[in-house]
Image (tube, rainbow, N blue to C red; front, side, top):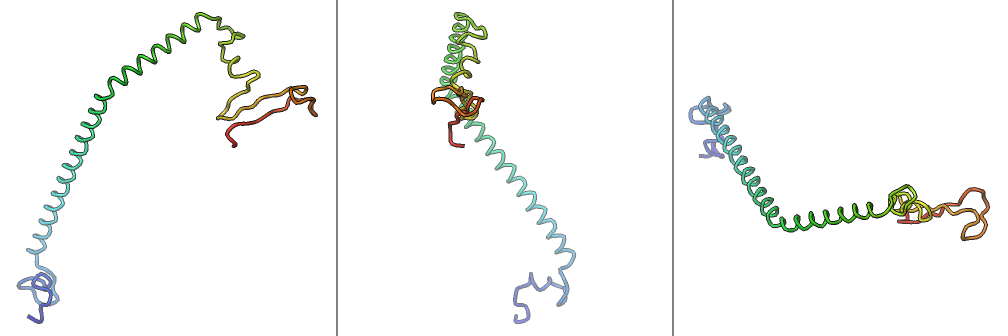
Length: 145
């Protein structure tokens, strides 16, 4: 068996001579086997994907069920905060100059907050003595950027 080192599968088949490829029957068997392997891998991937989806849905349902008390508690606290805020607005005047208006809380002497930085305009004769320019000086501070 010196002439056929790799076995009959490398030699080209039973009746094929040396140097010839596999016969038509071997090609047909290879095509059918390839189709079967392809179909099996597709079915396996469908099963794996289905298992992943089912496990994910079970996990989501479990977390949803376990956090229902937390969600209810958070919803009650949000409703209570909204009621308290509505009662606070109704109890005090909400005009443009009132302390509860947005302009009085965010602007004015405290400065404007933009991305964690604050800008405060200081008048020329402000807390640090007289200023060189006629425009108000800006003090900047914040997160260092």
